[in-house]
Image 1 (tube, rainbow, N blue to C red):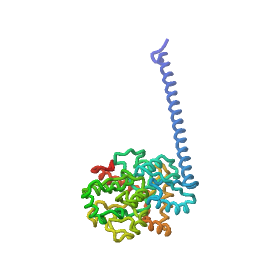
Image 2: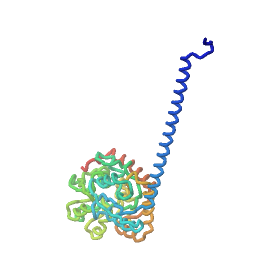
Image 3: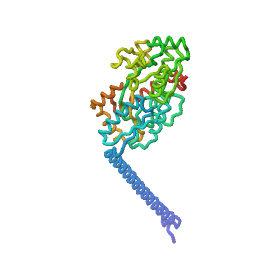
Image 4: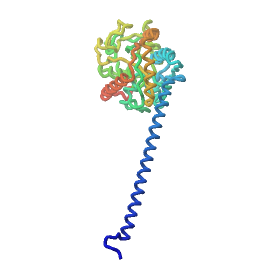
Length: 359
């Protein structure tokens, strides 16, 4: 006889089933916890090994030659300055620094190449500002994202830009240039280093502010444009003095104005664009190094430190000055801030202009 307080067989089965199920669930949770713990340990270990490897890579860097891409033609101002810097830097780095020219498309070809390079510090870009600050605002095909694909290393050199004409051009001042352009609409040819290049911006501002119609002629760099200026096939261009100083001194080219906010020490008789009545054209071209975006910060900082040391290289400073450049180095953080600020500023200019085409 089963008493009223005795457990029913079904209840006994349910109790055993529940106990077993709970045991399995508890065991399952323990297995999951153990698996999660092992995964966490393995992840942390992998991260630690990767960090250690990166630290070792940075400590050993550079262990082979460094390739610097210059997105301009050989012999132009950007190329000349970069080669001087490379020669000085390789003495501190203990490895060759090889300059390779990849001209075209206003610097976009060289910039795209570096954006896709291995982020190990062995391929870097020496460039003017357009690929980093201007071209994303234009209707141009970019094979890179200027804000995401590069790690700023150092802005290195600054140069006074000059509005230059061939020696036989009928105007010898900015005022005469503007007057001639208004009397001869569409007849002046003006060289630019690709659509969206920095001095294409300057040309568009000149068109807007002076109300003139002049024809833009794209080049892959300053050097071939200078050849055409000297031959009389091109009328005018804005250039840094690096490749023109000799021709200016000999009278083969004529500088009408500097785009600086004050007269250049090497050209004390050349007025500023502000003095000539076009203050909107004032601006300082700069040139600097960037690396692929995922380059380890330790390598970026090591490169930046070497470039900063070059400021105490009196021979380099003089050689750069001789070709029209001032060596003034900013580090990664300051360079990034300047690039971002100018990117925003050029966006506003592009919004109201016609910078997606030369004419």
